[in-house]
Length: 213
Image (cartoon, rainbow, N blue to C red; front, top):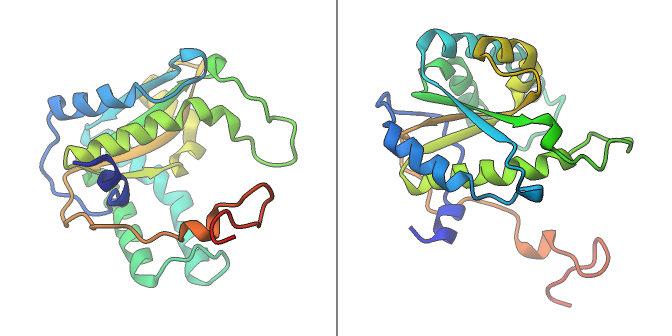
């Protein structure tokens, strides 16, 4: 597939076929993922592929805790996520069937290999993810190119100590995301809906449109 086509059609997949994903297909996706840009080429990321039904069920049970609170607030309008009731229903169904997804990939990162430059600001630190999430995005795009659907979530990161113990993740690693992976039960969209470039790209100063000046 053309790279732009892959990017424009890589929707979050919330419904999967039960078909297992072969090791060779996952290997191809991980092979592409490792070429994401990383500070100093320190390559901090490790991946854990979870297929065991009991382990997936435990991950689902932890996931449902924060998810239940999140969707309840979304449905009553306490948080505005811009999602339709149909989308919320699909996301809720995904959460309650997370253990049925063929594979859950746990993204881990070596803490000492992350160069965090924004820990002292009065906001959540995000800079450490600069050496993590480009590789994660590479993995998502590679999966799409291979016909796999994916769903990226960080809700389970709230249970990092439990997940690390369950999966024998070393103490000097963190968990950065969890990715559901499998063959989609529905066709991929041809193109996702996003804000136009004119609304999100500025020239020289925030709020000054780059286009149409």
